[in-house]
Amino acid sequence: MRAPRIGVVTFPGSLDDRDALRAVETMGGVGVTLWHAVPDLQGVDAVILPGGFSYGDYLRCGAIARFAPVMREVEAFARRGGPVVGICNGFQILCEAGLLPGALIRNRGLRFICREVWLRIETSRSVLTAELEPGETLRVPIKHGEGQWVATPEQLARVEAEGLVVARYSSPTGVVDEAWNPNGSTGSVAALRNERGNVVGLMPHPEHAVDPDVGPTGGQPLFASLLAAAAAGVP
Image 1 (cartoon, rainbow, N blue to C red):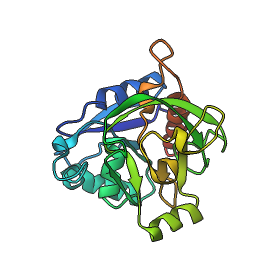
Image 2: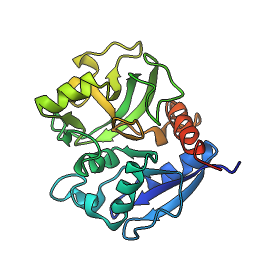
Image 3: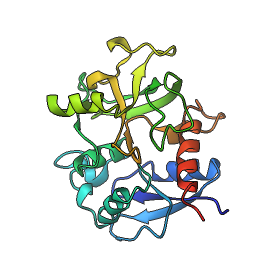
């Protein structure tokens, strides 16, 4: 069995694409660079939309990137059940594209935040957490100015009723309250999935948390889950 090939899309303004590729390679996958203007996924087994400031965050974060030619293929891939993960700006793009509910707006404190946080895993029913158990906590960094997830009352009710929250900001021991919510996200939501669990968006950066020499390693089990999900479709 060959190693799963994980495509990482580069948009104008992406800045964590190389980090995502390195994390994929570190965890045993094969990283494949995908260019925003080329509607071709090159036969990859999973797709990552990386962090950064696509198109300078003009209009709204992710609003222009959502119309990039490659996104037609990403959306079709997701509809077929292919694993798609959006990290930070990638999460914003997934919401703009309608692949995930709600929207990401300015942090409640109106300031850019860059620090490590703790996440409590809420479900193993996603391509990013299949190797984890609900209640486990992970330490990963965040770095964003527009990370406050919001939704309509109808969307929020569906998200909670259907268990679409993948992870919430928490204390190291898993306590969820506003004291541990860095950006004011509704329900302390840090990561969401779609109904099938093959599309996941998260504001924290697991690609910066795989190398023990430079920081926390909370990203390792997340990438391990993604690679396992991608490998499931590898002949």
